[in-house]
Length: 102
Image 1: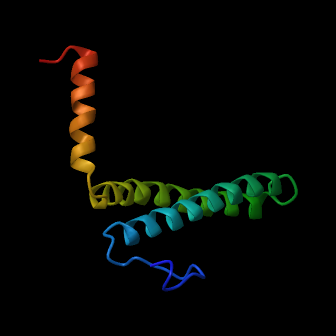
Image 2 (image 1 turned 90 degrees about the vertical axis):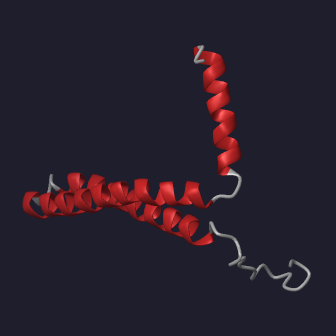
């Protein structure tokens, strides 16, 4: 694949985790930006209380919505990754050994 396009314009759409991974990253970036915006709104409240409060409320709402959506996108991403069932079985075996489950 690299030899066909050595400039890096390769998008493996055959991989089942491309779309969930992309949405997971973009949603996380939006959540992070809204958290930064809430911080800036709290600093703005010292100068203009009404506008600062408006910024904090809107950005906190966006942050909360993105965080809830991030949970769902993360579950979709984990289910889309191949070999997860093998990893999951190893995790359960490790937990059984450490906790004494039988």
